[in-house]
Image (cartoon, rainbow, N blue to C red; front, side, top):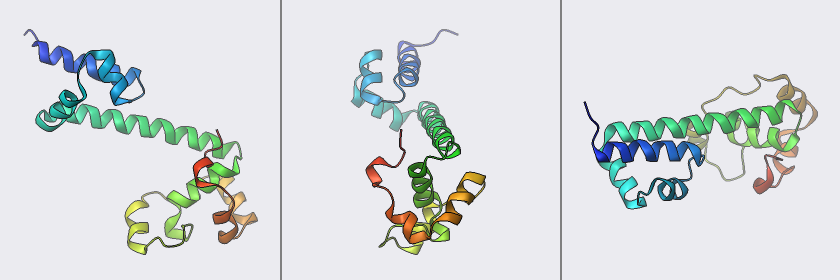
Length: 140
């Protein structure tokens, strides 16, 4: 069965999304597809939407793996970032965050890594919370 021109354009856009590390405007330009068309396809084509969402999850997995590499290397800012975002249920949260928000956002179990345990034992929760600038937490 021969694919339609639109299907070919969708496949080209998906390839461009992967190549551009999921920067939508760059991918659209590379594939010759307008941003409005991209969002139209997201709204009207469940298979396309699912493929895009799968790619978004892969990108997040990749970034999380890089964060864990930084944690393994002992980069304290990365550890603090992890604790502030994934350790909320254990009390590592910014002031003003509600408990409901904390529970909704935290899906991981903290302290699966010996580097995290070692750092956590050296500092109090308040010290960890005040150590890093949120805009520079990954330390990359």
